[in-house]
Image 1: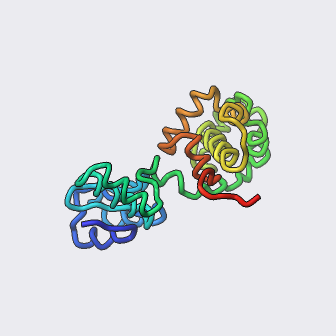
Image 2 (image 1 turned 135 degrees about the vertical axis):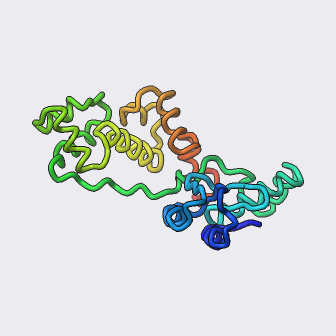
Length: 221
């Protein structure tokens, strides 16, 4: 049995997903988990194959799942042949996390100036002490108040800003991965790739191809 996107809700309501992993569109994942706590919802993948029951994250992910099932039952050659006929990728890298909206973090009223300053200086090796000094607070007091306002420790917030800026640069510029790593303070190229792949389960280069649409259409002169 195969479900696409919100079809997982029908399977869960029937009790067919109890004790199983399942996925759905990331916008609906939390609702699915709340309504059906016996289901292990994974919002980070394109599809999940649980044997007799399989779920996918959306319409396109449903195609990914069907190709996976063909590949499992009839082999790679058959799946690739179908993919070519449909003009789709035989296998897409990464999961749906790379397609999730990344809303801009709400400004912190108390530390708005410090947050703006940090975003302008992502290339620098900023520490909690640096942020606290800019805000004019003692580091421990700054950290406690920052967590209460932002819902995350200062350095985790800073990492999120760095990754968000790296994504923006990958989507909109031709800067090298090395240059982006330097501009965002994510360290060496190897460290940037490692952090990026851990978060999005895909490489920076693949992410850039996905969002810039390279090699996908002929552009008129």
